[in-house]
Image (cartoon, rainbow, N blue to C red; front, side):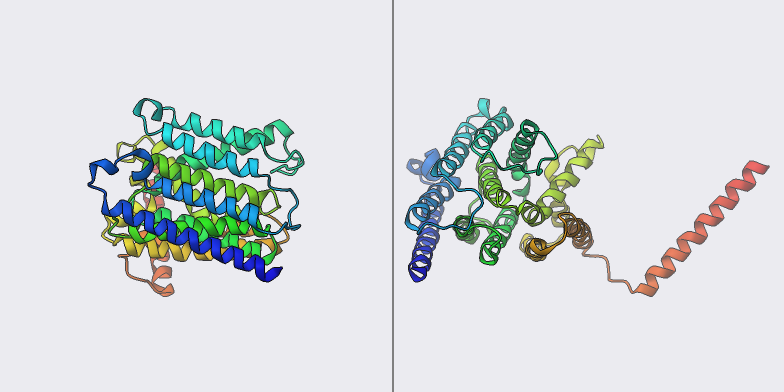
Length: 361
């Protein structure tokens, strides 16, 4: 039975990868073909959506019943997530409706939140049931809506989607989440890996804004499946780069300075590219950061609390991104840093003395 299970998983995953790869190849070859410009066949998101939906459906019905989950996953949960993501993506292709893009994702998140198991509480009873559900819907919709800010440079969306989902697969092997959830994550990881062939610098294919957001919505759905099994803190750590990037860029926008009024140019990756570093090198470094966060997230299942490794991950993320952004600055020794600190202290003391002398006079 175990051999049959692995055979089914391997067959479905390989079919998903090659089906997506071939579809992307066809789109890439026929980009200039007017007859191929329909929203369904020409939009890069829909190979992701259709192949992933088919792969997850096949795994759901073909795999032997597993008894490794706290809450059963109904096919209604799977279908609702995919159909709502596709609906919002299609509606957002129309300019008039696109203005209400966030409201659509919020409605989709609320719909999927209503289908969560009654016994599941994300904040483990610290919030009333209705507030817990409302918070989940807000987090889910914001996660999806802001995913577009990762698409300002080739390869970033690919890295930030594939690496955390590989972390989900590892969690499934470790027994922290159900095998079925790990298989769903593997389906998406392989499809986006196929997309990476055409999205790596220099990119031949790019997701639309709404397609990128819909991908974020489905990624958040996978993380929610992990959260239902008690692995919410692991999913949080996997997503730390994305969270830090978007929050930092948003805070700079809130400063109201004219140069910070666009979110994407405020991001670390975009600023690093402006300083002259190639997009492929930036993506490779973001992959290294995400890989470290995946290691942290996997160790989280053995941690005594849900916040220590997350805090360490935030510190690591800020340090890494700042180091990457200042890639042109030569490495300094500890002695040089100490001498600079002492020099700054002396200058500050001298300034204080001068100010005091002026006040006395």
